[in-house]
Image (cartoon, rainbow, N blue to C red; front, side, top):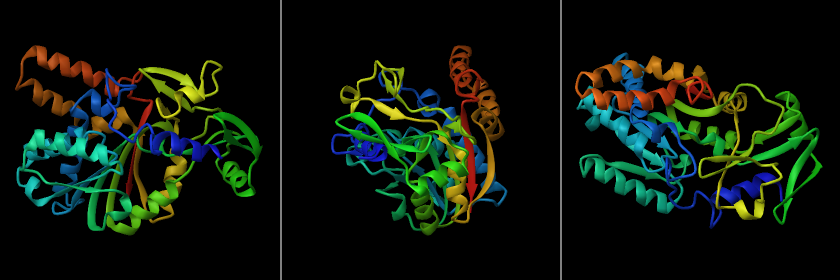
Amino acid sequence: MYFSDYMNEWLYGEKGYYRTFKAIGKSGDFYTAVSTSSFFGASIANHFYQMIKEGKADRNGWLIEVGAHQGYLLCDMIQWLYTCDPTLVKSLKFGIVERQPDVREAQRAYIASRFGSDVEVVHFEDISQVNVAYAFVVANEIFDAFPCELYKEGKIATVENHTIGWEEASDDMKALAEKHYLQTGEIAVGYDAFAKAMAKGIKQCDFVTFDYGEKYVRNDFSIRIYRKHETFPLFDEAVDLAESFQKDDITYDVNFSQVLEAFEAEGFQEAAYETQARALIRFGLIEILEQFARQTSQANYLREADKIKTLIAPTMMGDRFKMIHLKR
């Protein structure tokens, strides 16, 4: 099978890594911005709120998260919107796109623990099920979890019995690699279909997503395995694919040029592309922290400020992660 099929089975198969709820943070395999600080979601919500105030977003539309894990991000956003304007929690509608039944149940339980029955969140199994006039769609680290092909100088990876081999790539695959100046690295599979489904069901859309990667190719393999906060390059001699298969996370750096190309083909335009640090600061992260400082103890403030450093420090998440805002 091609590597994309192998990776799809690894992550989403019957016993796939993402088939059931996975802990994120200290007890899991990795950290995300969402698990680092609730101010991540508050900052994005603050940006959405400013757009609503300026008439750039519909206060009667939808706020939808794709790949919400336990639901922290969406809940943090709802909480901040309520702080800014309590009427928004009544006028807006909320949704989560999540394909895994076990994960949906974990999300429902967490949302109920945060809001009881005061907030209704609709679940969609796939983005293609969303059919609305306007939505602000947010996602954190979803594109790195799309399956990919591995490409090396005109050849494409295959997998048999957890062993990687190589065969001549198709002309279409070679043309795509040449278009993105790629000689060696990952070629994502599924971006086009995802963008098409979003465009078909959402008439007007603001899509804000964060992930690690660049707008250019590295011409090297970034694909790696995460296990208990340790990183193992896929082609490291110490990696045993049979042992890691479906037990550890597998991911790669996102080529944002490929993301943009897929969405532009469906009528989206790039509204912004910048580092996570620049985006969160522009969204109001520092002002939110200052507001928090006026309402809490010095110890609480310092603890939260330390978490925020992780989000925006150049040597941590600040520069490595990027935000792209796509608008239609």
